[in-house]
Length: 79
Image (cartoon, rainbow, N blue to C red):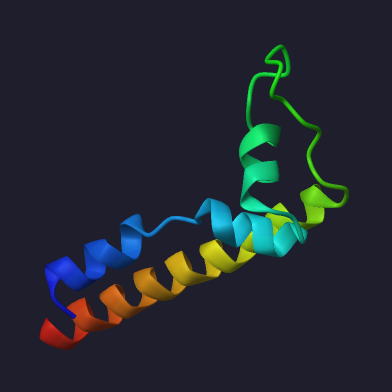
């Protein structure tokens, strides 16, 4: 794996459409739930959002763990 491929994997982030899909909500609903509650456009987050976001976080952490392991293995094989 080269530097660009490794850093591309590192900087990949979870998108609003992915959050919306995990929550079973529209992207617009997620955008409004992220607004300042004082805003007139604010809406409450979808029910069950905590578990949906936790699942996405665990998946992302697994991806990062895999990246670290791949890079460490690659480094050892060159030593």
